[in-house]
Image (cartoon, rainbow, N blue to C red):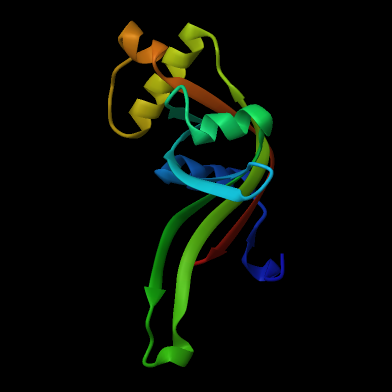
Amino acid sequence: MRRTDREILDRRKMEVILDTTPVMHLGLWDGKEVYVVPLNFVRIGASLYFHSALEGRKIDILGSNPRVCFEVTGEHHIERGSGGADCTTRYESVIGWGTAQVVGDFNEKNAILCELNKKFGSVADKLPEHVVDKTAVIKIKIDEMTGKSNK
């Protein structure tokens, strides 16, 4: 990292950013081009989880290449200053790399979907069976993360 003065070294601080940020940008490589998609997600332990349709471009890519890169931007705003030269951005962000896999167990999928819902304000602890069945849940095992902040 070029700006080591802005680097977040404390993993717990990075986890707080992950836990309080609603959207993750997931980068996938299909062998020809990069595909980036914004997703709602939840962190449970050392993994990130998101839901998806059972089929589509994202699922196809993950089936052939499970390596991913993710990015989240926490608090951020632009300070305009008095002119263009003194404009700056205040931010916090996390970038990470990992390996994705589909979660197959029904009960595990249900629990993860409930945790995802709780992150966004729902208190449901069980979802209808047909909802769980028609939803893919993807786990990203985090291999590495870096954080950066200019607050």
